[in-house]
Image 1 (tube, rainbow, N blue to C red):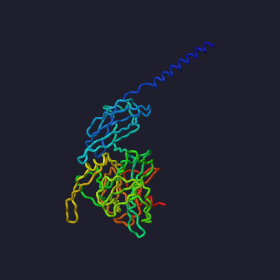
Image 2: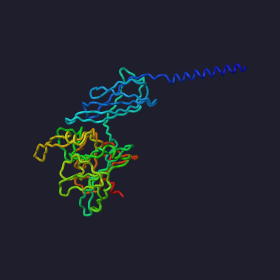
Image 3: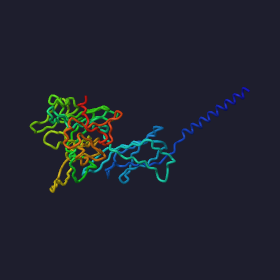
Image 4: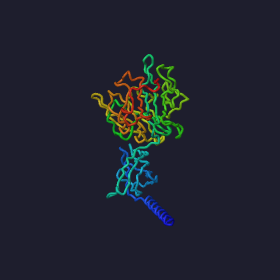
Length: 414
């Protein structure tokens, strides 16, 4: 009886081993290879672009195995690659560069795309290879920066006079990592939102026409900004209260806009606050933001140096000026900033006299304001402030939704 029991136990052990091996063999069964096509679509408003240094990383979310492809081929205005990889569920990350022509100039920009939880399985195989489409978006190394506040109206003195030396701009880091402001440009539009003309050639869908550009100095990692923190750019970085008791202290601003000028009054410079580099200012005097709020402002990251920009990024255009029965052909020569280099843009306008927005709707579909009518005396001492939700600034590329108009400036809040 004892021998029978021992034999039975031995049989069960052997059976258990075969069962386990069978299960293990089933678990390690090679996955079936799947043929799949990955198609990259160019950003809107860009045609005849060339894709360079593009790399797609496909990560199997179960095994964490990664597969890299970089042999994309041109398909009309898109780029495609045929994949052969094990069945599974994948996350896809793509980064690359594009080059294209704008205003007779060669422009370069970095692009990216991402899709998660893409299932590749034999059951999805049909006649021809299944296709996953990814729309490429412009990517900037400064991604995460945005305009969080623009104080353009200025304050009023106790006697009721306008005071604009205390204008400022705030730039926030809306990412989850430390960002570096080095090379970030603050730009102002040449056009105004209350005066629309038929400018030709029209490049608004591809670029912003500007008359001011100030750039944060640095070699790349000299000006870190922590997540959720802001930089303050003051037009005059001093304590303004001794001059105007209704104003505030900007002597501890992060940067100052200083213009060397032959104007008798000149511009005041605080040596303790670093100046932005003035690449171009189309005026003789010192920079002041339009107090009625009819300009647009943006942050950009030029992918060329100052000399190249000043030489190659001129925008020559014309329009017909009309006043009553008088018509006069006009010619202008300003600068343009490619939309692919712009990180964030904010349109300002006076609601009752607004005629158009000054940047592509891809950058800002709406506008924000201080005051509600033209030359509104109540606009002073007010600001436009970006809204926040769950600790993050709201950024839908629609300033009508993203900003509080007629807000209390942050430096005047108690």
